[in-house]
Length: 123
Image (tube, rainbow, N blue to C red; front, top):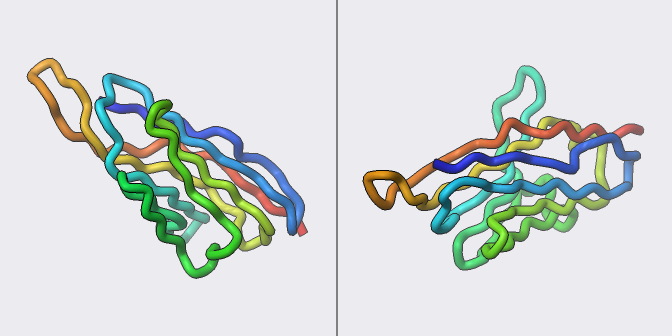
């Protein structure tokens, strides 16, 4: 199995920058797909950025040109660089990853969420 943990959240002023990272641990063979989501109270979880195993990226319209998702396959980490932050970016940011891990019975697949990290953008 794989466990994900986000880090880097915090408080930042409008127009500032922040980077959140997702570290995967466990007997991971490969992360095939990874994404960053965010959620505010009373709202559904929103897909912010997505990256494939080939490195192809997609972004929500609301963050295009401001956010960048990247991955380090050797370290099993996924990072979201957030620039020109706005108050509406305030949310709990979650990492999601899918891939393969080495289970006792053999190779198996996983899909895991991190516990989330709070990002707050002040006016």
